[in-house]
Length: 324
Length: 304
Image (cartoon, rainbow over all chains, first blue to last red):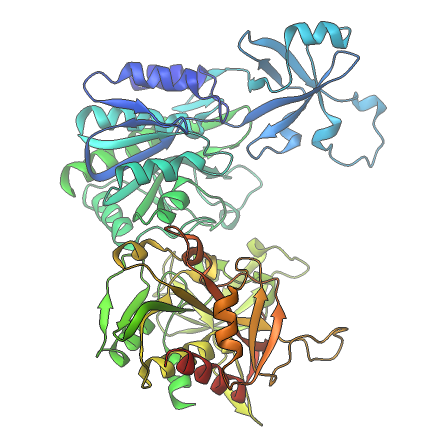
């Protein structure tokens, strides 16, 4: 059941500012609670405002910025994306999901010491022979999403686009079916956490928990010191990141709940990165972050462990039952 | 100097300001304390007229343990300071133990840096903090040490808070400022503030190698016409200009501590008054004793 909803969410397109498809899917899954969409595009689910759960609906992607006369499309990243992960990737553009490939000159033509490409050197090839032909298929401002893959790699590992933060959305959906807390499925997190502050100011909860996917670099040759988190080591609790210092009492209550119930957990071993917690905290709400480790974040192919997924869900379920 | 050294001796790592917070609260116990869930200390000194606010940073940059190697070396992240500046520094950890910050040979990245505790790193855990161990020292009218500038600002504000003044004033000792995460949420509980003075630290450039000396240590309080976050309110600036205090003008590229308060809840007119510090933002800063006294005098006279 969980994995089916996760797959549906991941296969939906929802680049920042264009979260409609994801929002509709989530809203249709909520049957017994009052919901509405605010001006930022957040989906707000009403409930007990002692605690607000927050998970962002949007994913990183691309936006078409120019159509060349030769039919190729130029683009800009929406959210932080390393250009190195884009080359050769398939994308789908606009409402009609026009397929394209992100291209660059073949290796045979590259100089030995050629540097990694900049965004402006890349293009999307949709097979059009001319600008006119391309304009019939795509327009400036169209969003391009990564190809919606979703695969079970075995050993409980799932490969998909947009696990950041559809995994958080799926967990939050499960939780609000059982717990009557208010909830924000936020918009535009990847472009500066723009939706979250509006959501926090609407509910003005006593506390908030952000449910996220977070960086994981535990693959060879990374050493333990280089790995902020490890896949399979359990839900990740943040003590500090680039945009927030989570409330220590809230954090401690999560850690205590995990320890009491034998749920293995881990700290995020870096203060890099940022989440909606920064915006929620700026609104004056004490906030904590619980996340799943996710390999290859902000790329077309990300990986989580379902064991971490289940333990994150279990921890938050227990916390909501026992602590508030 | 005694009070300044006492302030500097209290733990005030960003996000972990409780020890200093409670010390300051005890010094100011005769005034009303306003609770702030984000850790800032807000104190209300009742007086005449529309309420004004004086805000100063309470916290310091710090390092936080992220990983303990099997051989006892600690990996860490730095908050509020460039980790590269810490290489070779002695650090005092939360449990009082001392260590040295070093870097793997030939490497530069923070992930290649570590804290050598000389032993097993026992007694420490992930998320424990430490701060550079460079106590304040006085030489020929100057005070130097880790965060000398911000600790001296605290001393000046505390002195003004304890002095005889007349205006109704809220003193804000802001937590989490080293990572620019100070929260203005407490403003919601207060009446509308009419004026805000942000007490900051400015970079003094009267040292060898600096081409244009604008701010001098010993040149008096820096009254900022503009910085990255506040354009000085003319009325407040005129009032400060008129005070018999040694001062120098500045256009700064730094961000004021009170920036979030300046723009929150409809906004508050503000000016930043700063203490000049040589080697501002470096491991060890240096401030002039006379400037600290002038800063305290400025705030005290402004509040009369």
